[in-house]
Image: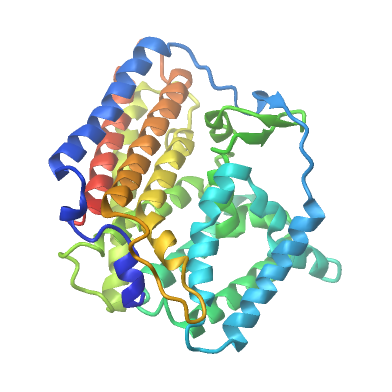
Length: 402
């Protein structure tokens, strides 16, 4: 990214923390451990009901309006990216801030609205009327979405030319064409499994207060109930771990120890390495839990949805200041870096990480009560608890800028 984007992305140094790093680390770990201790005492039976939960609400959803808005925004973006003036062109900021980062608060507040507004779905439905249809292979699972999102994350974090207007224009155009053609050939089910941005939004929307019940009714629900409705097709767990690992890598590149800025090879290897280490920690924790699971439980997928709050917390921590500052960019506009203090940024970052892990521990505890064999309800959770404490410590350390 450009220098401005890098400087706006994160705290930038330990001295910005409003408390000593050791205190932040201990407080974060303590919050997770205390939450677990309280859950083992007060939450002894499964309480989350998934898609069976929620109170019906009457709410009009302007589906046609959302589809039209999505098309207008896509065409407007491509017009500005390809034909707008090169100087101070806001297209990169729109793409990385208003779209990528903006998916998080929009999905948290309103649910999977991107699924309704996604212009690629609309274009694919039109093209599908004249293109022969094929069945989408079930064995693909959500791996196409893993590939598509990795392409974006590589552009943003490892390519070295993420702030290039031409690179952004080419990527969005190529991504759109591929998704529309695939959606036309395989039908609307493609976007649930092949569009990385839509799957990302859907996962985050699992934490929204709105959702659909088994009978199709729109309901107001406990956000943790929404997480349990996520279908664990092959590739879902790697998708979540990819997002987690990419935020770890993003934090690493902000530290003084990262001296490979601009190196595509180092960036690519670093991104892959961060994802691999994040995944290895999860695999290791689940492997230790495996002996305590009931027969028939898929060990690496049963807890995948519990990582979503951590994914959201990491995203908030790493992109909050970036969104506030870079979201101000436009034609000829300047960025006011004084709108937020370093202490306010740190509070949001650490709070996002800790809250995400507390929600993850709660969700994992409820799922464990269903999956663990009788008599192992507590000891069987220790490996995953240790994993989440470790994730908490790593997340806080990375945003501290040490």
